[in-house]
Image 1 (cartoon, rainbow, N blue to C red):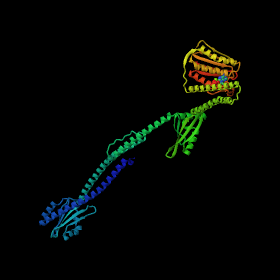
Image 2: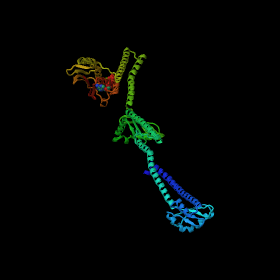
Image 3: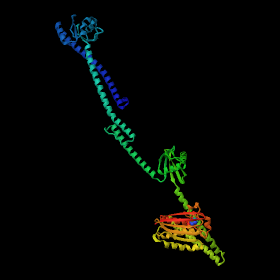
Length: 585
Ligand SMILES: Nc1ncnc2c1ncn2[C@@H]1O[C@H](COP(=O)(O)OP(=O)(O)OP(=O)(O)O)[C@@H](O)[C@H]1O
Ligand SMILES: [Mg+2]
C-alpha cells in the first residue's frame, strides 16, 4: 500500500537517486584516494632517495653515510646503497615483509643493475612471494659513478590507509543515506499532506458536504490548487442552493395548482404528483375496482397509452376521460433529455363544472327562446287575422284582441320572472325582513284566490294553526311563495277538488303547507320540479289555458333559501300534492 502512495513513490525515488549518486561518488573517491596515496608514497621514496644520494656523493665514509641514511629514511622503509666500489649496504626496517628482501635480492639484481648502467631514475613494484604484499622500489643512480640508492616501501602500509579511507567514505555514505531517508520522508510528507487533505475534502464534497474548506498553507502550486478547490466548493454550494430553491419553488407551485400534474419517466414511473392528480388516480382506481395502494404502481392505463404515443410521436397529446361522472381533460407533453424523450408531464384538468355551466347556459337559452316562441307565434297569427280582416264581427275581434292581450301579459310575466330569477341566481336577492301579523297576511292571500276558487268550483281554505301570530320575514317575498304554491295547486286540481293551506309557528319555525287533491306529480319528476323551466307534464300544461313557464317553483326555492329555510314536496299521482315550507324565526 505504502509503495503505491505518492509519499512512498516520492521517497523511494529520492532514496534511489541519492544511493546511486553516492555509489558512483564512493567508487570515484576510492579510486582517487588509492592513486593519491601511491603517488604520495612514491614521492616520499623519491625524496628519501635523493637526500641519501646527496649524502653519498658528499661523504666517503660508508659508516657515516649509513648512519645518516638510517636517520633520513622512514623506519618502515628499507634503503640499499650500491657503492661504486661494489659494496652493498642495506638498512634495517620495521616492516616485516621487507626484512626478507635481503635474501630475495639476487632475483631482482639484474633489474636493479639496469638503473645503475642506464644511469637514470628507476621505479617499479616487485613481489617477493605470493603471500607477501607488493613492494615499491625507487632507484636513483649516483651522478657520474656506478652506484645507486634504492628505497623500498611495502605497499601493505598503503593498504591500511586505503582501508581507513574506504571506511570513512562508507560511513559518510551511510550517514548521507540515513539523512536522505529522513529528508525524503519529511519532504514527501510535506508535499503530499495537502494532497491527502484535498482528497479527503473531495470525498466530503462528493457526499454533498459543500461547506468543506481547505487550509491554504503555502503560496506554491499546491496552495493555488487549494484556493481553486475552495472556490469550486463555494461555486458548487451556490449552484446547488439555487437549484434546491428552484426545486422547492417548483414543488410548491405544482402543489398549489388547481390542475393535477404528474411527471412521468419513460417507463411510466411517477416522479412528481400533486394532490389533484392523486385524487384523479384514486377516482380511477375506484372506478376500475382496483385497490388503491400507492401512486407509483397505479398509473391509469389511459395515461400509459398516451405516454406510449408521446414517446413514439414526440408531440403533445390531449385526451378526455370520464371518471365517476366527472369530465377530465389530460394534456401530456414530452420531456426531453437533449433529443431523447426521457418522460412526459401530464396536466389533468377537471372540466366537469365548466361543462355543466356551459350546458346550463345552452339549456337556458333554449328554454327562454322556446317559452317566448309560443306567445310570439300566437300574437303574430292573431294580429295577422285582424290585419287581413278575417275576424268580421266585433265579438271576434274582441276575442282576438283579448288573446293578444293575454299572451302579451304572459310574455311580460315571463320576462319579469326571468329578470327575478336572474337576479336571484346572481346572488342579488335583498330581503326586507319585518314582523307582521299572520292573520292579516292570511286574509290577503285568501282574498286573492277566493274568486278563482269559486270560478273553478274548488274548495279553498287557509287556516292559522297555533297561537303565535307574528311572522318575521320579507312579507312581499313570502306572499310570492304562497301565491306560487296556491296557484300551482289550483292549476293542477280538477273541478270539485280542494286546496288547503295552513300557516303556523312551531319550535321557532314558520311552517307553511299547501295541500291539494289534484293530479299529483310523478315520482320521477319530484326531484326536478325546483329546477327552472321544469314542467312535470309538458304536453298537458301546453294545452292548458293557464300555461306556466316552469319558473315559479325555482323562484320559490330561491326565496326560501334566502330566508335560510327549507322547502319539500310530497306527492302521489291522482291523489294530491303537499308542499311544506319551513322558515326559521
Ligand atoms: N300542486 C301541484 N300538483 C301537480 N303538479 C305540480 C304542482 N305544483 C307544481 N307542479 C308541477 O311542477 C311544475 C313546475 O311548477 P312551476 O310552478 O315551477 O312552473 P309552472 O307552474 O309550470 O309555471 P309558473 O309557475 O312559472 O307559471 C309544473 O309544471 C307542474 O308540472
Ligand atoms: Mg307555478
